[in-house]
Length: 556
Image 1 (cartoon, helix red, strand yellow):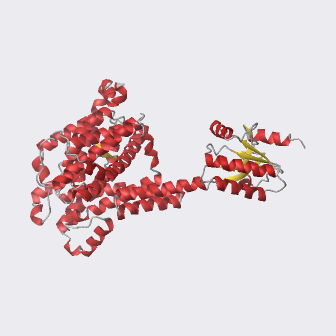
Image 2 (cartoon, rainbow, N blue to C red):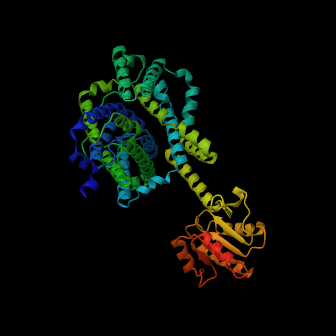
Image 3 (cartoon, rainbow, N blue to C red):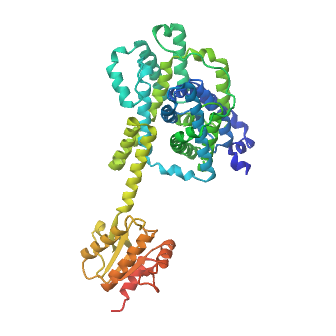
């Protein structure tokens, strides 16, 4: 029981001394990444930079105990931050104190949703977001992140909160661009991209922001109009419950559901990917509960909704870390940095933090995913593009809902209008195959019809009409019709009624109707519907060959 609830603790109890060095190196590297990223993503969420530390510290400790992944880098994440900012901004009405309280409340609501989902074993919900939805979502978020930093990286006070509005405002006010601000953000971004390309194991964000901060002090960049972070509280977060209101909870619920679904999907896919490479298993339901726990920690420390970072997950794996001790070392590094480097963090240029977000936005745009969808399915590419556009035009949650809705419609259409075929025997393949695909002629007097989808209300009429069409096209006078049920699997009440009418109709034409390769569940439904022999006229065979032998041995 203890091992199941606290998989990280069980790892620590069996800790090997040889793990210590790679875990320490990876933990220090992740901690170095977390300091600038936490500050940058807190600002992205519309909060003061030190709110990033409130959101991450307790969560690192908690995940080290309850998480099933040994490498997942939990904490502030840009997609979650911008989704939270969109939802809370519409409610807070410009009140900073209320805004911060609502953010903590939102994190708590996400925690409740995830913990309830884990108790109900709803980890399978991660599979609801298809590849086109994920590609579209992440691409839209990446472009939105980039647009959100146009003002801070150019020195223009951009007022719009939408992608196209920001781009339009930047173009119209290009004359207000501050060269020194652009130099700081552009230089930091270039360094981050180079380090990511040629030295991915180094804490690029810390190096880039550190050099920018050094330049800020030495060159007195604030005197040139470059904004700096300002005062950063060196106090560690103290646990407290956010002010709760039933009215606020109802307003925040849609955003919380979106964050929980998107954040969990991102977590479990990232964790599984790294776990598979490193040779251990990730428990989907445990990860759902762990996401709830780290958001609960963020909520009671006054933070905002958190998830995980792909970069903070890949780096420790690349450095050879073995256990969740990495998270504890990272936490200690962040605490030390917060206490000892407060005055230095205050001199950090905002354009440098903007460059951290810009680099994250560039990194997560899934160009490879879009290219694969182009090669595989233009329809799914259109769904991904629609999702990305929805994120950019409306907001993250609505964009995801648009893409999910389109995916559901596509899946429904594929089930309602599935592939079907007349089967013929292929001697060389020793089996029954699509007659049209292989250029074969069906057996005279026998029509074997395959329908590749569950048979239910949405496609029952199509099944009947397609079978009628096949009977008209099949050469010769059919005596038997065999329905290949291998691809059907499930039959609902509407389909049973259709089959009953079909049996009556074909029996009136002196046709024998049979099913082959039906599973136990489908056979039970057919029997309960009174269709199978001896109570009904529908015959059943375990294989197509058995049905064909019965056809050939029929009385003439």
